[in-house]
Image 1 (spheres, helix red, strand yellow):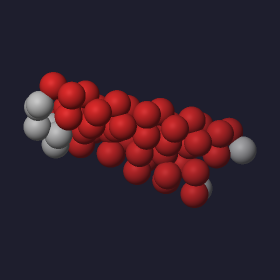
Image 2 (cartoon, rainbow, N blue to C red):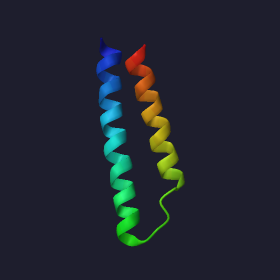
Image 3 (cartoon, rainbow, N blue to C red):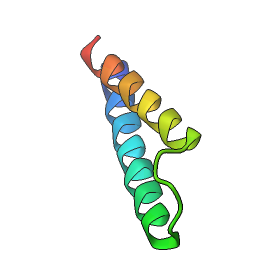
Image 4 (cartoon, rainbow, N blue to C red):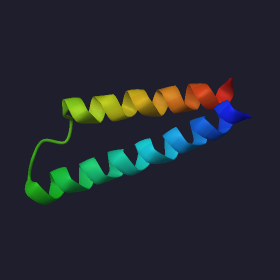
Amino acid sequence: MLFRLLGIAVIVLAIFAIVGNISNAKQFGQKILTNKLVVYFIVLIAGITLLIY
């Protein structure tokens, strides 16, 4: 039960971070795919894994 709640929280935070990073990159004309975005996707996958198990 605790891992499911933690997984949901991590997924929500990762989605907000990814959307914020993409919108900031578009606004300032920077490249979208950065190391920070890769880390956010890894966190998103970890949250999905916590949600499943």
